[in-house]
Length: 255
Image 1 (cartoon, rainbow, N blue to C red):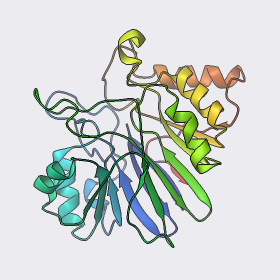
Image 2 (image 1 turned 90 degrees about the vertical axis):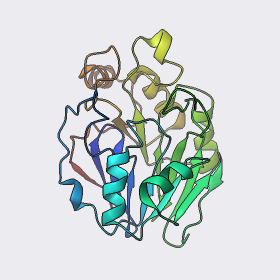
Image 3 (image 1 turned 90 degrees about the horizontal axis):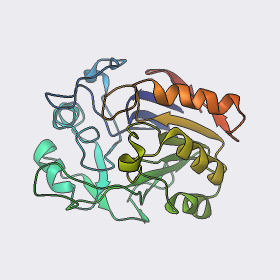
């Protein structure tokens, strides 16, 4: 079992023999937002995946090029996503193995192998000029082998975060966004700062906090390394109750 950060919000996870990708963006975000950290492996390396998960429709999470490449190399994978995002996925993949879920719903999986749930976040959706919030957005909980992984997705701080502990008990690994948060008066409603992320992790009493959503794409006003340095400072001050794991891109965390 392992977690591998691929940069930004993209993860490869193996759990109880099941392999999956979350929000895979394997290159640039369109023509204008260039990738600043190299993908640690060839995009063609991802084969025989069991699941591909998409949290919402923003282009730094749902990428047409990446999904078409992955669908060609993984014709039997199952896609798990939010309500109304299946139309976009069907255009890109031509797959009939697409499941959508609303908040607090569980996907149809072999529960003897893995359980996967869709949870709310404080965020929004849009890809074009006229489709604001026509698709749902959210987070994922993965459970198998006695382990619980919470992929927090894109979110501002809110009461929905405390609910995760109430619903699922101990969170072993919290994959939490800490970037694209400045200016905070504008971005705070949809992205957490490192300080807010630490507050959420402490309130949920997570065992390990694994930061994401920074260092790969320049999406806001803070310097690209700001979240990393801020978390190191918070750790030095003793502000983080659980363990902080600042993964390198491509590093394998065995769990």
